[in-house]
Image (cartoon, rainbow, N blue to C red):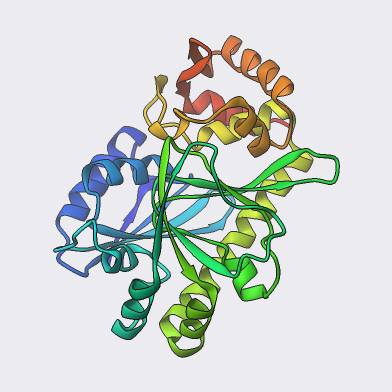
Length: 306
């Protein structure tokens, strides 16, 4: 295990240091990274430049404290289901029998932006993995307002809470990228594997704990921060580490104001006013109604305001 603490490295030098350390790993070796912000920009760069070469294990340990472990993979074929499972933290250490069983029953679906996989409060009885693209778990309140609980990125599962809790789906899972490929498995198969494969069971427990932390922190932000601060915090997920106004990550390209409102716990009209305030403050830049650049430091300063 190689350790790298980004908190001691200037923002502009972080990604080069990580990529150099990662490229020096052998097959199966791991790089553990400690940082002070959610590393979605790093994940986006790795997916763009070193796709299929790693397992991404991420933990939020506390306020402004994140830990990721990158496991180096070689000889991965991107079109094989078994290799997607090998890249997924839940199944990276699964026994070969578990992988073969899941591969045999997997059903692939291709979804366009806005397409749901399953609706809220459905007796779905299945389990899903994102192969590429992204989804969001969105709940609709009795008053009809939508709230995004968490994002589901490449290699991450959905429907796991209903599976392990033995109830209906807690949210509507909807596509937030231009296109998404997902795999759906019968819930009974995954449930059987959880009972028989200790590595998968432990990984699921770890994953559910992180999901819970994400939901709690988003709820806390929605009840304690101003709308502008919540919008700024949401946009931070799509910002690179370099100083000043920088092009946004591709993950923001397909995000609509309605989806941004759900993530910030508000409505589209309020988001429009918040974006205008952020633009006047130099934190974002828009073109043709789309956010094209953001300033990480200025967004962070808004995000810390009550």
